[in-house]
Image 1: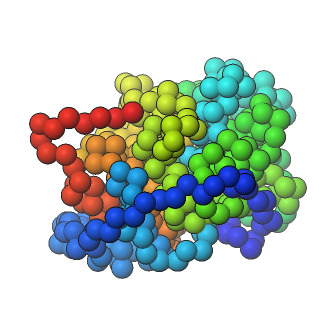
Image 2: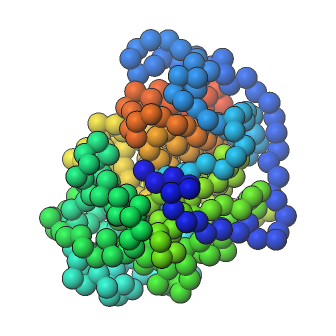
Length: 364
């Protein structure tokens, strides 16, 4: 895992527009009860204390109801993927990016790699057949080799050119960081601009972020698209509010195309079946993965998730109108019990705002 200080960074400017203020309405979320993954009772406060929380923030209907912990920027790690996915969606909406064409239309340098026949949609939904093992415990896995490659000051894109296919494209879903890196490369070529600039102009400035973000880069200045963004918890909460509102900010400006978000939320048989046969089904039963977002059925309705190793999470539930952010420093990259307990804590918070049976739910 590469963190700030181990690689160069580029500024993701918030622009010169006004900060979009977050209204505040205090609520006691810490005493909300839940049942842990192991079956024992706990409260939200217990889970936050026991899962190495650095900062957390919760919003309901766009208003902050709880926010504690470090106010300093923190590495989002793989939550970055979801923001890069939104950049792709905006480019598609503007006619600059075509999901149905091979990635080599935009990046001919991949013609001799395993990505040669993969489409942009394949990498967007992590459905290519390229071999890339996302196993943080195995020092020989591709994700660990990629980290070492970047730490040794090599270029990200050179690494991607060496990956080869092991299955037909589109035949499976398998979570792999390399897919996001290829997607980012494609977006840069389609738009003719580096990713830090694209995130700034297409998402960060229109969002009304409070602070500039940063993007970790390789030694050549290429953004690490799969996990390089660094920002504050409150600004990530603003991004979550944007997703909850169907891609629009409070003044009605559409930042992320609503059809793009509907595509992600709307599971079909193909996406569901691919997820069902993947290792991810054990962690998120009934879930799916589309457009660089995770989805899982929750007790109060389907939940959109943006996840990063070591406990970074953005949890968005349309039915309860809640957005929850957690920055963490888990000692291990992955910890199933910590993950499930955090999901249960955020589900429990959302349940306190769930509409009563028979009420009408309006979604954008």
